[in-house]
Structures are given as C-alpha cells and as structure tokens.
Image 1: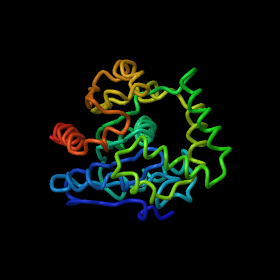
Image 2: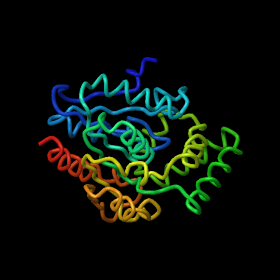
Image 3: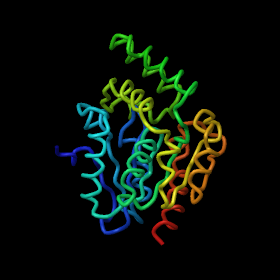
Length: 250
C-alpha cells in the first residue's frame, strides 16, 4: 500500500526527524502549527493513523499500524524522535516496545493510562453508546464533543478530517486484549518524556507507575490545562518538544 498520501513533511530532510502521531478522531492536520514552528531546526513529519484522514478507509489494526510506521521510518531513513499524543502515544509505545531500534526517543503526551478493571468501563459505555447512534445523530454528537473539548480554532480543522467510526470499537478491543501499556514499554531504554495537562486527571492516574517502569523517563506538566494541552498552548508544547529534542540529538 502507498502510505505517502498519509504524511506531510516540513523542513530540511537532512536534519534530525520528529515524527508526530495524533489522537483519536483527529489527524495530521492538527500538527501543522507545531510542525511549521519546528521546521527551521528539524525535519518534521506528521502522519495520519489508519482510520483517520487520508487513511480513513484503512482498518485501524496492529498489522496496518506497524506497516504504516515501518514504511514511514524507512522513508525517513533514520530512527526519529516520535511525538505521540493520546491514541498516538499508545501507538508509539506499542511500536517502540516491539521495535526499539526503530525509534530514537519518545515524547508521550496525555497517555499515561493503563486500561484495566474499572478504567475500561467508561470507554466501554462510550463505545457502546456511539455504536447505537444513526450517522446524523453521531455527527451532531461528535460536533458537540469537539466544541466542548478542543480549542475553537481546531474544531473546524478536525471536522474536515475524514474518520472511520469503527476506530472506536477497534481501539476498545485492542485495549482489552493488549498487555498493559506500562508493562509493554518497560523494557524500552531510550529517552522518554511524558507530558500531561495538569487537569487531565484520568490520564494522570498512572503517571507514577509509568515512571517507575521507565527509570530514564521524565515528566513535564502543562499547568492549568486538560487533555487537549498540546493544542491549547501550541507555543509551550513546541518549546517542550524542542528542549527534549536538543537533548536527544545532542
């Protein structure tokens, strides 16, 4: 499969590469401001995950995800620093745990959560509810959800991104069948930086567990922000990425 349609590149390809992975129901378009800010110093690649954007017709499953990331990193030509946000962070952890030599380092935003026990219940309920909605009602529900959870300037951007609603059920199934994220990534020994919004309480619940399993990892808190922290204060998130990248590629 030709995955070139699913990526955008910014900056000089001879410079160190930052690979950005988005969250669920989003797409590579959310990273354009971040990429343009970093492009004078880095080669920045943004990617649509399966089920999103240019890959809306591609099933979101382990095989396609690995195939997409393998293809992208082969195209880059060297292990990148992977910046994964929310679902993109979980994808980055799973891939890096299986293929540590394919990444240079990980910056993982708002994804320090192990889906287990009671933590699966809200997700199960949400997926079950959404699966029952007719398409027009689902579209209205997602529009309202985006307005409540994203900065205003991102709502229109995200609503123009194609999305396969089956991704919701597929991520739920993966969460149930997979090893805990904190266990899976525990053998990774390259640099890791976790970044969380101060009030992203659900995704902060397992911070200590992840930090314990990854002794080399560090944590940055974006104060006063929620789960959408990387989009609410773009300049601050860009600065965090750049400071980490300078250490990784020094």
